[in-house]
Every structure is written in structure tokens, then in C-alpha cells.
Length: 134
Image (tube, rainbow, N blue to C red; front, side, top):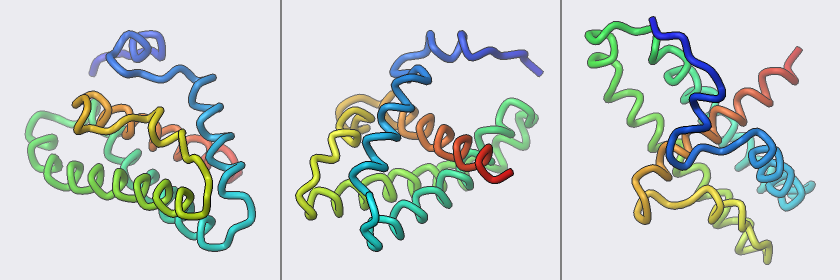
């Protein structure tokens, strides 16, 4: 097992520092407000985030064989997470909100590292939801 640190993560392409993640999350929550449809989409995003974070949190602990066995499921889960980000942003835009947080997270069509960035932010959402579940 490799020991890792937050500082190592920050050196990675398209990484987000904690303050940036907090700002993106704050903006997202302000736009969601009390809209019941937006809240439902956000809940679906949190569920997808928790599932994906489970894969991510195990990745460095798994053997090569376990990674190969889980890779297809992890990729499908990552794809589903991105769909949930897109659905929430699209809905908010239809309601007249900017949803500029989605642009900040980036699109994988523009840069392949944006896919990782979206996964990172999904893990952040799972973290925030997890520590509030005490």
C-alpha cells in the first residue's frame, strides 16, 4: 500500500483545493434552494457520489486483480455520477440559474482530466454528506 497525502493530490492535474470545493458546493446549494425537483436531483447526485466514493476509497487498497475485476463497475459508476451532475445543472439552467459550478468542474470532452475532477468533487460531496451523518 502506498501512503498518500492531500498535498500529493493537489499536485495532480485539475485538482481542486478544499476552499474551491466549498465554494462550488455553496453555489450549488444556493441555486438548489428549496426547489423540490432540484432537491430530488441533488439527492440522486449524493447517492451516485457515495457509490463512486466507495470505489475510489478502495482503489489504492485493492490488488491488481481486484482492480481489474472492479474496473468496469467503477467506470459505470463514474459515468452515472457525471450524468447526475449534468442533470442537476441542466435542470437549474432551465429554472434560470447560472449553474456556473458545472462549467468550473469542466467537461471531459474539453480535457480528459475533467473526468477525474468530477470524480474528485463527487468524493467531496460524499465526504460532506458522510461527516454530517453523525
